[in-house]
Image (cartoon, rainbow, N blue to C red; front, side):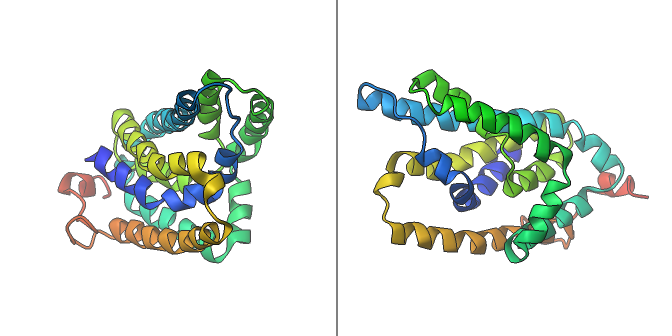
Length: 231
């Protein structure tokens, strides 16, 4: 269930990922050699992102038991959805909120420096490392996915959810990394304009899910055992 949920989340949010990480994907170094090496490098880059997301899910999932025991999973889901809406309608406020996250300020500086050096080297294996580091770049959508992973209840469940999320983003991101330079500017603008609409839809679904309205798949009721911990 976690894999399917994460996969769906990643697929729906692919356009947002393309908008945020698309420029980096387009700027990936081209290794010398055959077309096979080119495609292999792009595949390794995307695999690296998925691995990092999985590891982050493993870490954040460890907090899931605490979240559930405290009865916060509903509010975490609703809050994550609201943050996504803020990111669409009040981007400047969202950037300020994101800046208040300690790790969002320190880790990206190190990551950007490492990426800057690696992007100058045309090595296929290093494209995997670039993908691994890319997974640590600040991204509001990834933060929301991690918030959802925290509600899964455990490290393994969180890792599975984020693995699905990473896999879900690969089709669009791989296409961008391979064909991005051949996509016309007009089409890229249309994709960019569509991304906020997709983000709003996902935000509404996340908020509804946290409201426990008893709607199957969309807003299921919380299990009785989980609710019992809330009192």
